[in-house]
Amino acid sequence: MTTSPTAGQSPGTRAAARRARIAVALVFAVHGAIGGTFVSRIPWIQDHLGLSTGQLGLALVMPAIGSSLAMPLAGRLVHRYGGRAAVSGLVSLCCLVLPLPVLAPSLPVLCLFLLAYGAAAGMSDVAMNAQGVEVEQRLGRSIMSGLHGMWSAGGLVAAGVGILAAHRDFDPRIQIAVAAAVLLLLTQPVCGALPDRRPAGQTEAPPRFALPPRSSLVIGLVGFCAVFAEGASMDWSGVYLRDVTGASPAVAAAAYTAFSLTMAVSRLAGDAAIRRLGAVRAARLSGAIATTGGLLVVVADRPALAVPGFALIGIGVAVVVPLAFAAAGRIGSNPSQAIAGVATVTYTSGLIAPAIVGGLAQATSLTVSFGVVTALSAALLLSAGALRRAEEHAPHGARPENAITPEPEKSFEGNSPAI
Image 1 (cartoon, rainbow, N blue to C red):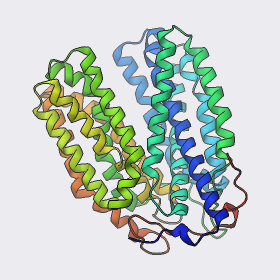
Image 2: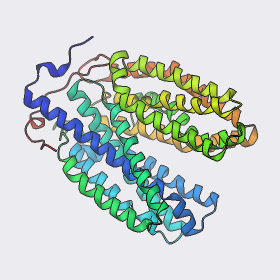
Image 3: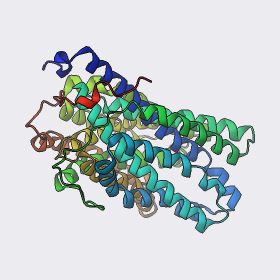
Image 4: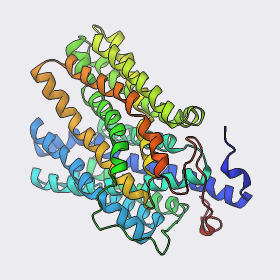
């Protein structure tokens, strides 16, 4: 066990690091709340515009396309403006575009608005994960799983508010405008406590549209397997319960709830396991848990087996993506570029997973589709070593899996306001 890198730091530096951790956690929660607010009103958008299922599916592809196209731009923005300003500006932009989808008068305009929403969300996702890696390095211990847990928690709370507003027939245009304003007001003071590390003067700026380093793509494949299982379970768990196990609508809905809650709780608690086991062993254990859950789902002939199976998949995939982002942040002198590469690969997986599962189910069965999901979960056992190999690309030499030596920075101590 290594000594915590914060042990030799001054009290002021440690206090600033703790404030920065709170700030970046709140940024993740705000970003999750933006997504949860939008998702809760998708049924209203469909009814308001009279969209068929296919038309709605087309529209919902647009945020993923916008994210994938815009993510490589994030590294340039972080390099030019600094991490704090990039996160503040991009999360604020997310808040500003959040009301647009409910104002769309037609499907083509909705697609354009969702493309813009996805671009803003994707770039801010890269920037805030780069900040998370920076704060993790300052603290010298894993925090990325907890940060992603805060994202999940923010999304669940905001979705709950949206569902309550829908139940009371509250106009979604007013609800989302109010939510966007509140989240925008929260963004500025929260981002003010983030560290404002800037690249050294001699560091070359990345291209405006930077392709990710090849080493980050290997790490991205680890995230790809986890996000594929996540996307498939989120979109198809209810249908699986209904069609394969004969569950009632209420029990079918419980599968999604079990998956979402176990994933959020596991992320919030995951850092302790990562610190104890290290990144590679934690990823392998995650793969084993997700594979066990997938096998339960595949063999399930009744809901009592399938619901726990989906819950185990949620537990298993929870910490893998945070680990992938943390590993990418240790590559090269511009972490945001590597994080953008990992994000692009992993989120592309989330985009294609529901369609692949549906296509396989159409050609064979949902059971076969989740056999593929289970196989990809098992692949985490073999690919987890990529998280260790990222240490070889880390600047300043190899580091232990569960402790990252922070680099001192004058601006971090003293100019980060308290929240």
